[in-house]
Image 1: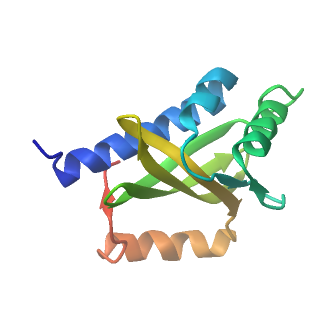
Image 2: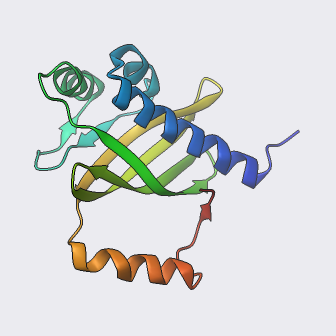
Length: 146
């Protein structure tokens, strides 16, 4: 039986939550398991250049998670957008007093959703309310399951 779209979106959001849980608990093993192995992966941390390839991406997470002061990141306002065997999540990341916007791209792999790409960047504070108002008016698209 095929997975219903809403159930699929929930599964993608669960994978996204697992990513932020691994980040919050500094769990490198979980973080590594969340990243795809069968497709090219990439990551753009705030202020960093693009990291291409699983080895570089995992090395970056090892550096971040094992650092002396890894950032505390909370995910909110997540929406999942499923495109067949791939999906993306757009969400906000709260880091101290700053709000960042993130895009996490997932692919189906080994029966689950695995990360293929993560990108996060700061949001100008005065634009945050504009985005939320548009979403309230139904222009956000995708399936938001918050």
